[in-house]
Image (tube, rainbow, N blue to C red):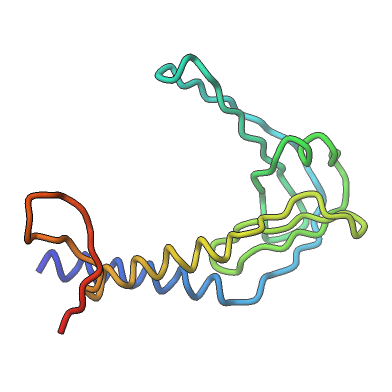
Length: 144
Protein backbone atom coordinates (compact mmCIF):
# COMPACT_ATOMS: atom_id res chain seq x y z
CA UNK A 1 0.00 0.00 0.00
CA UNK A 2 2.84 2.37 0.85
CA UNK A 3 4.53 1.56 -2.45
CA UNK A 4 1.32 2.40 -4.31
CA UNK A 5 1.02 5.76 -2.55
CA UNK A 6 4.67 6.54 -3.27
CA UNK A 7 4.20 5.70 -6.95
CA UNK A 8 1.10 7.92 -7.08
CA UNK A 9 3.09 10.81 -5.60
CA UNK A 10 5.92 10.25 -8.10
CA UNK A 11 3.45 10.21 -10.98
CA UNK A 12 1.63 13.36 -9.82
CA UNK A 13 4.83 15.33 -9.25
CA UNK A 14 6.26 14.19 -12.60
CA UNK A 15 3.05 15.19 -14.35
CA UNK A 16 3.12 18.64 -12.72
CA UNK A 17 6.73 19.13 -13.88
CA UNK A 18 5.86 18.18 -17.45
CA UNK A 19 2.72 20.36 -17.48
CA UNK A 20 4.61 23.36 -16.04
CA UNK A 21 7.24 23.02 -18.78
CA UNK A 22 4.54 22.81 -21.45
CA UNK A 23 2.43 25.78 -20.36
CA UNK A 24 3.15 29.21 -21.84
CA UNK A 25 5.14 31.55 -19.61
CA UNK A 26 3.72 34.53 -17.74
CA UNK A 27 5.02 38.02 -18.35
CA UNK A 28 5.34 40.24 -15.28
CA UNK A 29 5.98 44.00 -15.35
CA UNK A 30 7.75 44.59 -12.04
CA UNK A 31 9.96 47.08 -10.22
CA UNK A 32 13.12 46.04 -8.40
CA UNK A 33 12.50 46.70 -4.71
CA UNK A 34 15.72 45.50 -3.09
CA UNK A 35 18.74 43.24 -3.43
CA UNK A 36 19.81 40.49 -1.01
CA UNK A 37 22.71 38.09 -1.00
CA UNK A 38 23.55 35.18 1.24
CA UNK A 39 26.80 33.30 1.61
CA UNK A 40 27.06 29.70 2.71
CA UNK A 41 30.40 28.27 3.76
CA UNK A 42 31.27 24.68 2.95
CA UNK A 43 33.89 23.49 5.41
CA UNK A 44 34.21 20.10 3.74
CA UNK A 45 35.71 21.38 0.49
CA UNK A 46 38.70 23.55 1.43
CA UNK A 47 36.63 26.30 3.04
CA UNK A 48 35.02 27.53 -0.17
CA UNK A 49 31.93 29.67 0.06
CA UNK A 50 28.95 30.03 -2.25
CA UNK A 51 27.04 33.30 -2.59
CA UNK A 52 23.50 33.43 -3.93
CA UNK A 53 22.02 36.68 -5.21
CA UNK A 54 18.31 37.53 -5.10
CA UNK A 55 16.30 40.41 -6.55
CA UNK A 56 13.04 41.28 -4.80
CA UNK A 57 10.20 42.85 -6.77
CA UNK A 58 7.04 44.87 -6.17
CA UNK A 59 4.07 45.50 -8.41
CA UNK A 60 3.08 41.98 -9.37
CA UNK A 61 2.48 38.37 -8.38
CA UNK A 62 6.18 37.44 -8.47
CA UNK A 63 8.09 38.44 -5.34
CA UNK A 64 11.71 37.46 -6.02
CA UNK A 65 14.17 35.78 -8.40
CA UNK A 66 17.58 34.21 -7.90
CA UNK A 67 20.01 35.84 -10.33
CA UNK A 68 23.68 35.87 -11.26
CA UNK A 69 26.19 38.42 -10.03
CA UNK A 70 26.14 40.46 -13.27
CA UNK A 71 22.36 40.94 -13.11
CA UNK A 72 22.55 41.62 -9.38
CA UNK A 73 25.00 44.49 -9.86
CA UNK A 74 23.50 45.90 -13.08
CA UNK A 75 19.88 46.29 -12.02
CA UNK A 76 19.28 48.99 -9.42
CA UNK A 77 16.46 49.52 -6.94
CA UNK A 78 13.48 51.09 -8.69
CA UNK A 79 14.32 49.75 -12.17
CA UNK A 80 11.31 48.61 -14.18
CA UNK A 81 11.85 45.11 -15.55
CA UNK A 82 9.92 42.49 -17.48
CA UNK A 83 10.19 39.00 -16.00
CA UNK A 84 9.13 35.79 -17.77
CA UNK A 85 8.24 33.06 -15.29
CA UNK A 86 6.60 29.65 -15.34
CA UNK A 87 2.95 29.52 -14.39
CA UNK A 88 2.89 26.82 -11.72
CA UNK A 89 6.25 27.08 -9.94
CA UNK A 90 6.85 30.78 -10.74
CA UNK A 91 10.44 30.03 -11.74
CA UNK A 92 12.16 33.05 -13.29
CA UNK A 93 13.26 32.23 -16.81
CA UNK A 94 14.18 35.62 -18.27
CA UNK A 95 14.68 39.16 -16.94
CA UNK A 96 14.68 42.11 -19.36
CA UNK A 97 14.93 45.89 -19.04
CA UNK A 98 14.13 48.07 -22.06
CA UNK A 99 14.53 45.12 -24.44
CA UNK A 100 17.94 44.13 -23.06
CA UNK A 101 18.11 40.63 -21.57
CA UNK A 102 20.02 40.38 -18.30
CA UNK A 103 19.18 36.89 -17.09
CA UNK A 104 18.12 33.91 -19.19
CA UNK A 105 17.81 30.26 -18.20
CA UNK A 106 18.55 28.44 -21.41
CA UNK A 107 17.89 24.75 -20.78
CA UNK A 108 15.34 24.90 -17.94
CA UNK A 109 12.57 23.34 -20.05
CA UNK A 110 14.74 20.37 -21.10
CA UNK A 111 15.80 19.61 -17.52
CA UNK A 112 12.23 19.93 -16.26
CA UNK A 113 10.86 17.63 -18.99
CA UNK A 114 13.57 15.01 -18.39
CA UNK A 115 13.03 15.16 -14.62
CA UNK A 116 9.27 14.83 -15.01
CA UNK A 117 9.64 11.96 -17.47
CA UNK A 118 11.98 10.09 -15.10
CA UNK A 119 9.50 10.49 -12.25
CA UNK A 120 6.62 9.25 -14.40
CA UNK A 121 8.67 6.28 -15.68
CA UNK A 122 9.58 5.39 -12.09
CA UNK A 123 5.94 5.61 -11.05
CA UNK A 124 4.63 3.29 -13.77
CA UNK A 125 7.41 0.77 -13.18
CA UNK A 126 9.49 1.16 -16.33
CA UNK A 127 12.39 2.54 -14.33
CA UNK A 128 12.96 0.30 -11.34
CA UNK A 129 15.57 -1.48 -9.32
CA UNK A 130 17.39 -4.33 -10.95
CA UNK A 131 17.11 -7.07 -8.34
CA UNK A 132 18.67 -9.81 -10.47
CA UNK A 133 22.22 -9.25 -9.28
CA UNK A 134 24.06 -7.89 -6.25
CA UNK A 135 24.85 -4.49 -7.77
CA UNK A 136 22.71 -1.59 -6.71
CA UNK A 137 21.39 0.67 -9.42
CA UNK A 138 18.56 1.31 -11.78
CA UNK A 139 17.67 -0.15 -15.15
CA UNK A 140 14.99 0.46 -17.72
CA UNK A 141 12.96 -2.67 -18.20
CA UNK A 142 9.62 -3.33 -19.89
CA UNK A 143 6.78 -4.21 -17.53
CA UNK A 144 5.04 -6.75 -19.81
